[in-house]
Amino acid sequence: MLPPVDEEQLAESPFTALGLGRPIVEAVLQKGYSQPSSIQQQCIPAVLAGRDVMAAAQTGTGKTAGFTLPMLERLRHGPHARGRIVRSLVLTPTRELAAQVADNVKAYSRHLDLRSDVVFGGVKINPQITRLQAGADVLVATPGRLMDLVQQGAISLDRVEILVLDEADRMLDMGFVDAVKIIAKATPSNRQTLLFSATFEGKVMEIAKQLLRNPARVQLAANHDRHASIEQRLHHADDHGHKHDLLSHYLSSTELSQAVIFTATKRGADKLARRLADQGHASAALHGDMGQGARKRTVEQMRRGKFRLLVATDVASRGLDIKGISHV
Ligand code: AMP
Image 1 (tube, protein in one colour):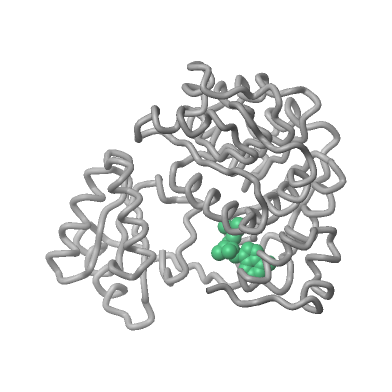
Image 2 (cartoon, rainbow, N blue to C red; image 1 turned 120 degrees about the vertical axis):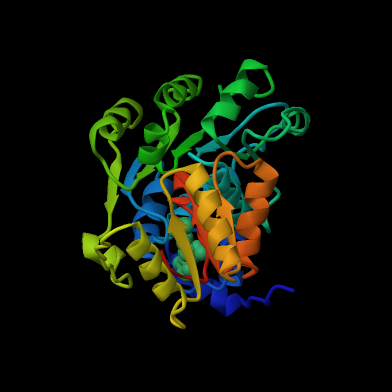
């Protein structure tokens, strides 16, 4: 059961003051948010005003609500989606992030009759085609699968009102430059475009210049604000054996609740996960050679605390939001 929200709470919420309507503020309060984050304070009014937005924001800043809340506010007033029409499109680099963003969209739109959906590769395309026959007010997608769906005529992008590029730098690093350009080109040129990226170097700046018109720039006050709660330590290892000893030492610490351990290769991830399991740690591997079902299951089990250690390649390097992780 969701906690009830009273009129006074709704009226006095800072989210109401930012211009969001009642059903959306109600969902936000039920999520337990009382104050908008800095990114949200800057993004929400700009998006509501119809402006393009270019935001330097990483996971943990509340960026997902920063674009989703005002997007839902705009969408709830227009004619709803029907027959293969997509009204807003959120592109994300990975399946995990797509699923996570889609979960957020569902939560924030629980009091609205907007249709949202999520599509990514690695699972059957036919059920996605069937579902999309009814259109989507919000579609969250990874670029590759979205291209397939467009090419098969399953959806049309020529009525997209809002295009969001989430983690744009990572999307471009993963080789989706051309896909992003093609997808943007298939949407109307008078659409609203929101771009979120950890960095604005090289290709990202180029794409931003091509796709955004006079964007509002959103930035956190200072870089160190973002990581104020994170302590970074560098350990020098003499050799392979020493590295493993250091790892064992830190893994046995009681301060460590859950940890993600990154490896360079998929095989390395499997090997280390097995080794740690042999040492008695509840651990699992996560990498791109695993099927989508297995990847999703592993992340969920980590979230529920079934595993203490997740040994991952860079498929998990960004965007995963797991509350219990104390160490990386
Ligand atoms: P994000 O950066 O969008 O991945 O969000 C990071 C986490 O912050 C998620 O668990 C959100 O549910 C949470 N969050 C987003 N906005 C707020 C807020 N205004 N107050 C508290 N938590 C929030």
